[in-house]
Amino acid sequence: MIRIEENFLKLIPKLPGVYKYFDESKRIIYIGKAKNLHSRVSSYFGHKEDLSPKTRVLVSKIVWMDYILVNNEGEAFLLENNLIKENQPKYNILLKDDKTYPWVVITKEPYPRVFITRRFNKNFGEYFGPFTSKHNIDYMLNAIHRIVPYRTCKLALSKDKIDEGLFSVCLEYHIHNCKAPCIGKQTQSVYNESIDQIRHILKGETKILRKRITEEIETCCEKLEFEKADALNKRLEYLKEYESKQIIANPSFGNFDVITIAEWKNRTSTNYMQIRNGFVTLSINREIKNPLEEDYSNMLEQTLFKMQTNFNSLASLIVTNVENGSIPGKRIECPQRGEKKKLVDLSIINCRELIEQSTCRRCADHSATLKNLQTILNLKVTPIRIECIDNSNMMGQNAVSACVVFVDGKPAKSEYRIYNVKTVQGPNDYATMREVITRRYGKMELTQLPNLLILDGGKGQLHIGVETLKELNLIDKLPIVALAEKLEEIYLPNDPYPIYLDKRSDELKLMQSLRDEAHRFGITHYRKKHQKETEHSVLSELDGIGKETIKTIYRAYGSLENVKREGLDPLIKLVGSKKASIVWNFLEGMATSHE
Image (cartoon, helix red, strand yellow):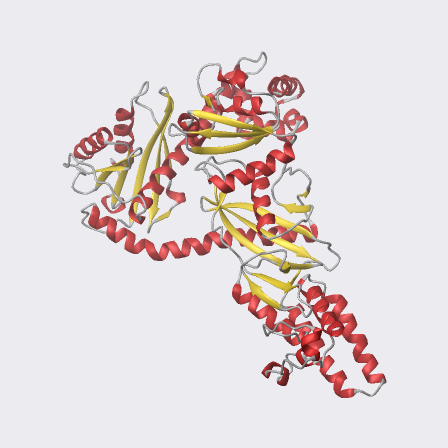
């Protein structure tokens, strides 16, 4: 194990492998893989301004590291996933709701049984699934049972025991759900043909069985065996009914998997679908915990591996909405039109539906949470409308303050506001807080005031907030508290001691959501502002590019990244060929220097 100290990077080889980060107590907090360990690990400890805020938090907690060398990137990928599954590190991408799912098993007995199980033992039989719903799988087996009769008893059937007459028929035979192989009315070979038919259905290969039944009906009719033909016709109708319950993608499609990742209402989820012989045979949604806010291309690999492992898929073609995704041994398609694009759209709808359902369940609980918060904070009214203020700056430069609004426990994004700090020079969080509270509430109508104001900070921020509200004559009209991040202490006016809530409580989680949302909103705006000012400064140093040209470019594009994305021709139309060439050559030079 290597301690994170000066020159430790010299100890890291430039080889493929898996790295593990540990905190002070030597507990694993993050696991990653790399084609080049030295390069990847160095990226965490180089220019901190290039890291996201949450990655900076991770780096601040790393005290030790260790690594395992492997032969190639594929081995690194497998090892990384196994280690993440075993250790569940705090800062890794994790899929929520990792439980055991039911399977359908066809046993390896002479007269195989077909039933549902949650235990997987490949030596016991052939497994299909797993499936996400016990209710759906019960329906499916009942439908299959009507199409292809099979035994449901637990008798240890063998030809010798059957010949000895050790068994007798049960009710299933009399109601035509079984053809009594236990007493020899159905031979072993014929029974196993039925099991083969069930196997085809479970694989989604119903076309083969439909053709076979149709041919048998025609044969029976030619032989004038109308009673048998009628029974077969009923089986055919049951099969068509079963097929109609399946979602058809496209009969010409082969076998592939669809996986999409989407953000909806500040939460990230994934939908995974298996397409087999033109049918959607599986669709499952999961929320994703993504503490370091990694982009979708990084999340795709781990999420797909987990899904394919859990749901027993070897599909090599992956259809997704994630652009620039790359997975060793898989062919990635990101369709923009056609039937596969419709499947991707359907998958994204399912992603969002998971969040919608979860949000609705949470909304039902918000009323009680808000009532409890009223009691805990000794508020006169239920805090239906809550606002939270958070300041963001880098050594006092480009200081901004974010105010977010929650109504009925949910974000009201249209009411979020950013305040560019005007009166404060240098890093002064207290003065910034005073300015923003004054600007926000100084001219606000009393009927528009929130029921609760939360400040991101501790005693100092709360003191400034109280003093400012007193100056505005609002101290009795606007309840105010502060939430300190490290220990999640809640400070109230006129109380020297903080309140500590159970970290699992819904009341604390709601307050944390406001604080974290204000931080996210502020940091996002701060980055854009900082980037814009940096780009303005850089462009102004280019010979032949003046302030008006810079304004024209930013009004049209918003950022240099968008200029690069749109290409040279639109830029020429906007500012002329000479100025466009100067800007474009500069962008090309930047791209080369970063490679």
